[in-house]
Length: 259
Image (cartoon, rainbow, N blue to C red):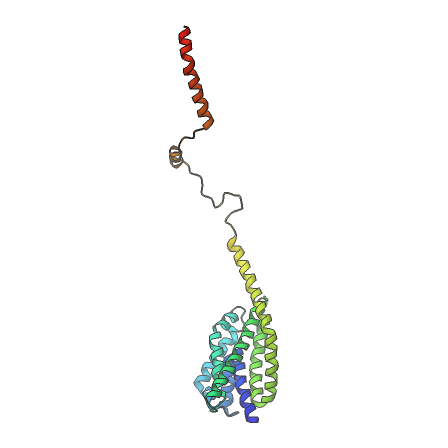
């Protein structure tokens, strides 16, 4: 029973930690295996390789600073959507050892799902935190995440039942929190869209002004346009002229006859 709880806690803990800080999770497990503080399962023994730990340490340093810079942390999280989730699935599958392919696949599904949930919670919270102009909130959140990864993995290894109970409470919290984070993210991006969309829709000049209209033609172009314009005939004037001419022509013989 104890072995099952330890395996389950390490499997779920690896996936959970990968979604928050993948490189810290690799460093913690690799260091514990390298120093002999724990016997890593066969699928995770590669983490104690010095080359793997060197690369993970370098990437952790990069993330340490990127994760504490407003705006940069969101870009970093977006890029790591393609890294943390599959890595969490691989670490969880490696944590079950050589139980069997079915157990490895189930562990990969559970670990990948946990990594996706924790990654979504972290990235969504950072979008909302970045609406604050001061950087101290980012620093505090980033440091809290690093501490949570280290403490959570140590609890999964040394106190698996306690970790599983806390993980169950954390999952319930995520079920309640993720919809709220999603609504908050939509409001943030909606406000940004209205802000930049309003600026883009502003006309070049005041309404009713001549700004933005082509200037009237002048010089030879105006004369050419005038010469090409057909004469305007006014209906009533033409009729009056016609009737006057007719009356004149009719009355002329009478005057001639009288003379």
